[in-house]
Length: 407
Image 1 (cartoon, rainbow, N blue to C red):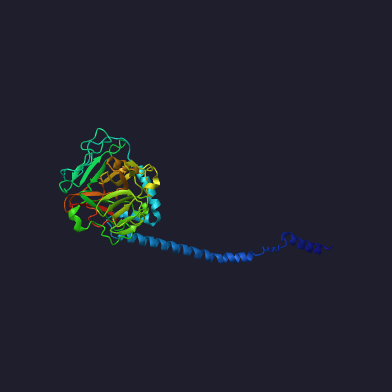
Image 2 (tube, rainbow, N blue to C red):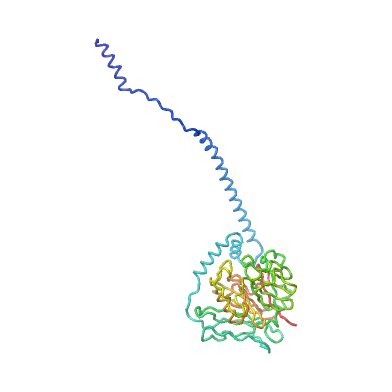
């Protein structure tokens, strides 16, 4: 081959060595239906966004409703501090479990320590020492801790006299040797010289907005004392009857503080059906009896029976009402008590039947007066947190008033 042709052939072959042939891109075949799936995915994005917008709008509406409800509740008429009303709003709006849990932890952490130095004296109770007249006088409360302090367990007449004798006697004593600094206070109400009335509060029982929610001013002249009632009805599942109106049907088996038209009062385990007869003036229920026939209820260790919020064992302010063998009324209150220890206080004070009333420092109140026309108001225990004039103005909760029986 001539030299020129050889040179031309070498250049042609070198082009293939330095420039490899172009590769063709293979087409990838998608599985059947993939295109449709992609189109559905693109269509689902707007649907998810719409769902998110609906959820966000729903949450905003719920928060707005809750905020409006809270503001309305806080701005309504009330004689309770803001903190108490806020807690009550939480209870009434689905957070009762949270409030009860926090309270239980708080009271458990702040439970009193056993032992410690003994008291040297008891708080003075009573306004004016009344002179005793002939008739029944309750026996002194036997001391639980010995030696007793001066005046411990002795009854002292207080306030104005009715037919020559004090209608209310008060006493204090130390109820538990393990806690020598605790003091229980008891008020004994003479059924022959006093009568009682139950008043609905501003918000309790429910649907009681038309009630006065206070001691009527025209009855101040005969007023001797006022004291707290029981749990909210939603917590006790009990009945409520006052002034001929059944606010909540009575439940058989519930402890019931009752007053008849003849003026006599009693604490019973109710068995008369949802509505009382015409001989009943008022009936207020709250849990089962804690004392019956002079004996403690054997089920006091059953927590759920003694309140939906704190049960039986948490040590808090507690109050209770009972009657002695002569039909006289006995009220008791003390701090750092369980359902069982409250029952023991009432039993030692002479109650043959008794029931628990309200608990917690915000609600336990007993006030009495040193003279007619609500003069010289005083608390049964100085450590009770509410004012000594509570119930002389509209109150959120129902309560009891004690009047002189002059006839």
